[in-house]
Amino acid sequence: MNEKLTWRNLFFIGSMLFGLFFGAGNLIFPVFLGQQAGSNVVYAIIGLLITGVGLPLLGVASMGMTGSNSVFDLAGRVNRPYAYIFTILLYLTMGPFFAIPRLATISFQLGIAPFVEKGNQNLVLLIFSAIFFGVTFLFSRKPSKLMTYVGKWLTPIFLVLLGILVVTAFIKPMGSINTLPHGQYVKHPVLTGFTEGYNTMDALASLAFGVVVIDTIKSLGVKHPGQIAKDTIKSGLISVVLMGIIYAFLALIGTMSVNKLPLASNGGVTLAQVFNYYFGSFGSLLLALIAIIACLKTSIGLISAFGETATEMFPKFNYQAVLLFAGGLSFVVANIGLTKLINYSTPVLMFLYPLAIVLIIIAVFTPLIGESKWIYGMTTLFTVIPALFAGLAALPKELKTSNMIQQVLIWNSHLPLAQLSLGWMVPALIGLVIGCLISKIKKA
Image (cartoon, rainbow, N blue to C red; front, side, top):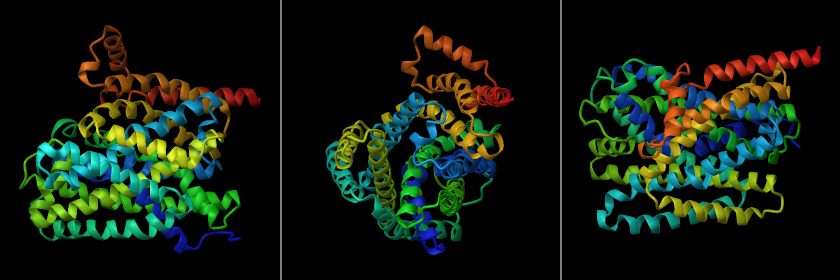
């Protein structure tokens, strides 16, 4: 039995975690942020790194520091019914309803669609997504092999391929970063970058992947809870440092691209144009390999985590059967189309993210504020309503026409920072203070 992991094993677990994190949104959103932020890109990157790197690290750390074996275990510190609701919503969002299907559709859009006539794309997406989820299922059957599959094989290949673009873009830059910022990036680049980090889903993914990391560490012989916590944090740090560096590079490439390329409607289009600019027709093939490998490794991790958590919450479920269910449902949802997926996933993300952030922050500060259920409960209670408001505010326009939703949007507009989708922050802080006071009174 190992008392602690070697740095070699820590690096491979960190590489695995990076590989699990770095999927669809991680490729396209930083590039789009760079194009929109213009000369304010450095400030926007800071905001992105808080939610896209800082929160995932805290998410992984929260699992280790509290000795939680899963997000269900961690959310249970609020109460058991909430743990069921939050965990099911989280894994459906990170699983077959949004995140996993998005991995198939984005890898198709970036890697396969440029080679297919428009009239045939729906049929080819159907075939591609069937293969994509078939391969995902094959690699997900043995969670103990994830460090080998993702950490030792897929991630190094991905980094080498992406490194070709990054090195080329900085040796031959398209221009300076002194371009015009757009939208909210003009006045609020940090906070806009902060909320843009929601789209990567990494803070939510950190809770989902926590169980994978902890199980991997245990499989290597580490059994002491304190050492599991330390090794979880160390591997998480390795992962997020890699993510932070690549986010910054991709955002800067996006900003410089404005000197040669028009503003695009999404980061996928920008990325394809950048590869074509530097590598011509070979760029499409290179992007195809990068996109498919990036999305495949994250899909493997998410379906594995979905299966492990489902069997923990409902012991009668069979792991392989859960994988088939998740893969089959993801296949169906993926064929609805990428644009619809992002439109309908955003409101759910805006609702779940505040709840996840609150859970992570309280867990990380447990050594200072204690682990009273009053602290978890009151902070969560004060966060739920403004989080719901934020979710409704992010609904597509056609779904916001009812009088009830319009009234909710009016209430939401009165919350501090609501215009930046951060209206939950002040209520959450009030709930935290109330929870801390009640916990102290109960002890007195």
